[in-house]
Structures are given as structure tokens and as C-alpha cells.
Image (cartoon, rainbow over all chains, first blue to last red):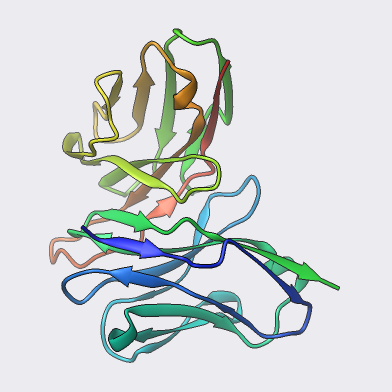
Length: 112
Length: 117
């Protein structure tokens, strides 16, 4: 069965510092991969997605992610974090073209 | 506002009561999904509809849960005889499946938070 692992439950980063959130997936074929962000009281918002092609994908809000098949990873990065980036981040893989399988999430705190 | 809306946003109920949640998808979207999110977990897929047809149900969807989308527009999720373990955020999402079957983004609503006392 497909699964997604986000090894870090909580990360704290200083404002202006770089960020990397880790995601590992288990999937037999070429995966469709996603990163979502969830702020308190808000729905999940799609940051970026990977289907095929260029393994470095750009998303909204200055985020990017790199698909590495050899490592079964899809890590999310941002070069300079803003206080407004504090939220919960979820990595997900698409199962059978319908259901999204999510990781448990990483909570990002931003310190000033 | 043309996003996915869910009502109510919060529901507190006593164990054993029935509850019903409503989801209004983005108007032209033909797919509608329900997910459940418990504290400290990512969302878990429950079921989805293509127009009015319920095409897939997760094993998480026990017999006490029923979902409908009678006219292919809004959907309701009912939980009968609620249990404390049903306390969670229930998320709805919608998407547009085109004839070429390319995957399209699922847009999520803000969720309904259920607390069972």
C-alpha cells in the first residue's frame, strides 16, 4: 500500500533562514506527489505538485520541491522563511487517481 | 466566494446522537471527496463521488457513516450513533475530472470540527 512518511513532527526555523521539510513515499509506480499547507482555521492549500518531467518543481509562496526517485523523497524547500510561513505542512501521494494519501504532517514554527 | 464551503464549521454533540455535515463544492466540479483528520494526523480518505455516484469508500467508513450527493452538487455526510472516537475534523474537497482523465487539483474546504462528548 502507498504511504507517506514525514520524519519531522515539529521544526523551528529563524525568520530569514532556509527551510527543508522532508518527505519519503512508498509507491510502486511513478508517483503523483503534492505538498499542502494548512493554517489554523483554513483549509488545505496546494503549494506544489509533481507528476512527471523536471524533478525540481516550483510552487507558490516561494516554495520548491525536488523529486528524487532513488531516495523515494520529495523534500520541500524555501530559501528564506517568513513569519507568515508558520503552519502545518503535509506531503501527499495520489492513489489510483483519486484518493490523496497524506503524511502525518510537520508543524513549522518561525522564530524572530 | 467560489471556494468549497462546509457547514457547520463546528459541531458538539453527545455520544449516541446523529450528526450531519454539508459540503458545497466549487460549482463546476464533478468530483467530491470526504476526508477525516484527527489530532496530530494527516487527513485520511473516506469516500468520493463522481457526480451523484459514490465510487469508492475507505475501510474507515464504518456502517454508521453514510454520504450522499443526490443531485451531483452538494454532499452530506451523516454519522449515526456517534462515538467519542468520531471526534475529528471532517474535510471536503472537490475537483474537476476532464474527459481526458488528467488529474486535477483537489480544492479543500475549511472543514467541520466534530467533538463528541
